Image (cartoon, rainbow, N blue to C red; front, side, top):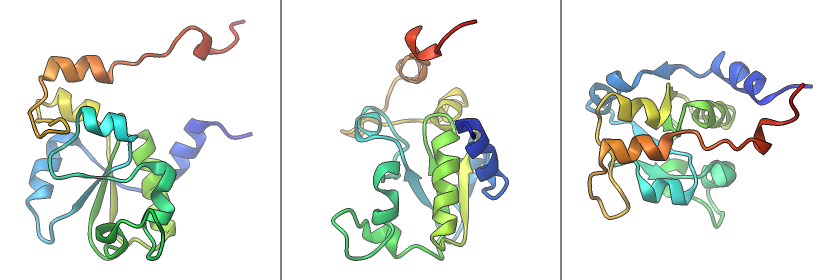
Length: 155
């Protein structure tokens, strides 16, 4: 039986990662990478990197294809465009990055450490209205909220 970390490790054998402190320079390169946030809509609305687009992992495959209710034209047309996938910690982005590769996307990178690392590096995040989010507020938002019940049976 595989566990989540096994799937992430397998994905990262194929998907390169970029460190948060290297991302601003990469976003200035040409062609401009598509910054793809694969978190849930409420997470994105609370805070995200300005200029990123939201495509939750749950609709990723159909968002990449033409002719679906979930189609995101910028993504569906971007198979040759560099794509940098982001999430909270770099795990969902690695899995989504591998999915994109399997769907024929040629240049996919995952943001190592995710938006947590981006915030820790002092980089800006904005809310749904485009207002900059206080870094301490972001720290609280990104802090793990795992409950005792979610830790599973203890020996």
